Image 1 (cartoon, rainbow, N blue to C red):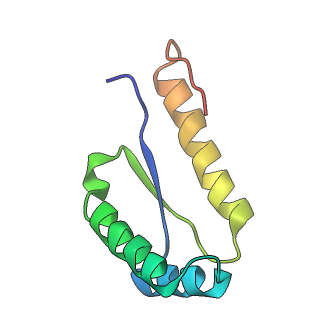
Image 2 (image 1 turned 90 degrees about the vertical axis):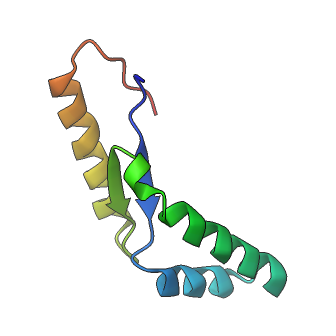
Length: 84
């Protein structure tokens, strides 16, 4: 109940598939399983307090959006301990 849930998502499932295959760290079967798992997880994004798109090539921007969320939540709930 006191948890702040932030869901980090890829820009699209196609982008995710490209990221997974470009890594070449898993077998094709494992890549397919991870892709299918991600599709199921993305369908549940409404269960989270915030959804942040992890834009390709914009790690700093993604981190800034998460930092903004944490700062906003701290202002709204100063008694809540924020830990990452």
